[in-house]
Length: 167
Image (cartoon, rainbow, N blue to C red; front, side):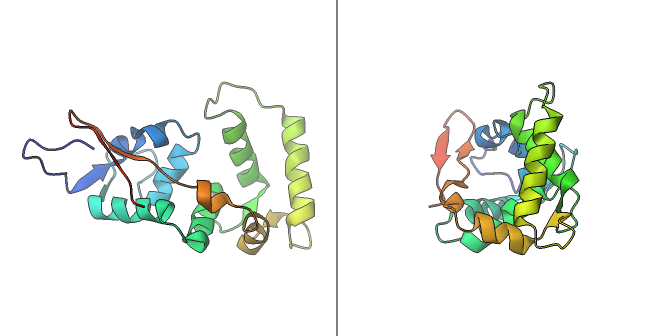
């Protein structure tokens, strides 16, 4: 975010500005996080209000927000938006993480498919083991301390750069 010449923050933040925040630009799931914040996919000029931006940032950073963070993490991995994590969602997630965002890096498909099949066979409550529901996701991820590491650093970019904390 850049301060206007008046010293005030803009009333909106664009997707382009959001994607240039260091913790987002370095995250292989940056595009997915942008969608979770409410930005339109692929439109660098898509904008949300600064207030909405701060509310979403607080969702990531506020202690004790475990249930909401689970929902956000699930939404980030649900690439097709059908409220289930199917094989295609898991493939896209695996590929994105394994490549660390660099789509030129090859991912061994056999290993990926074996991992995905194992996850589905061991975790899915679906009788056909075709997808993970939110309850499946919550049952497994909810037992970890993921919520203490699911945070975003917020930096204001400008000549008076300051690190903001929502904690």
